[in-house]
Length: 389
Image (cartoon, rainbow, N blue to C red; front, side, top):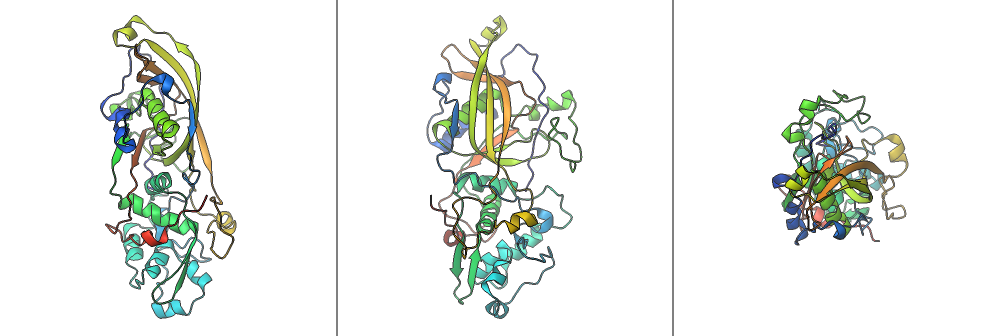
């Protein structure tokens, strides 16, 4: 997963001045995604919401680079990353459907396209190496695909030479993730900037992290690490999820790492009003409201495990079709912040209270068709079929 993760230590603000959103922190950037004006009036912003289509926000591996990404034979008893043999057309014709189904998603794609030179697989294997870091992969592609495309169904396809290819749901998810990681051509919108400061919010580090400790306040408060303004976060979340049921991607790691996740819902509670000083009023603030929000997103599978594979994550079409991911996982973060309103009741800014918070939030609109550049994946137009509700 291209671990674009950015968690930052939330340092409580001692400033009495408004933290207004503007420029690259303005929720208005999402208006081009929604094709309508954003709602800013606080009383018109839903305090809770979730996606109408529960097929979005599906869990999936970030397809680790050091295993070969989508060229990894994740369900094979001897996957041999980067070292396996590519089968000829003649050899494939002698193999069973089950044996072919154990190949990697990229191999299954190439075979379906009758490409026995394995163009996609070779390009993917050239992109990654066994020496890539443990967290590197295509999480940005997985999160975007999970936000844009309803969960894919298993599919059985016979290529023009008569070879039958069984794609499990996870195989198609990997192909979708690869496409949206590199081939996207839609409209892009983002609020917040990526923080490149090394460190972790207390309690959110991993033993594999190079630096599991918080950065100094001086580094945490650099301009790039200001993160999504709290007021902009509240407005964007309520508009995208609450009003329009539109998923998006959030980097839920505040500092230097990037962990992109597809947002599926939220629930907010008004805690009470905060004091408004003369300095606040001098900046156009007439009311300050403290909010607690439970922020929910589809959790990625950090890597394929024997347990995950044995439980049937592949969802072969020879089995009963499924309507939900076998290994669907959700995770929530609890945020507290203050939103600041002007005299008309519109949200104009805010400030964070909790140390944990999103680093940036973004989305790219879904294209009507899949593309072949830079990776040959237009065959997804035939392979991808959403599960039926």
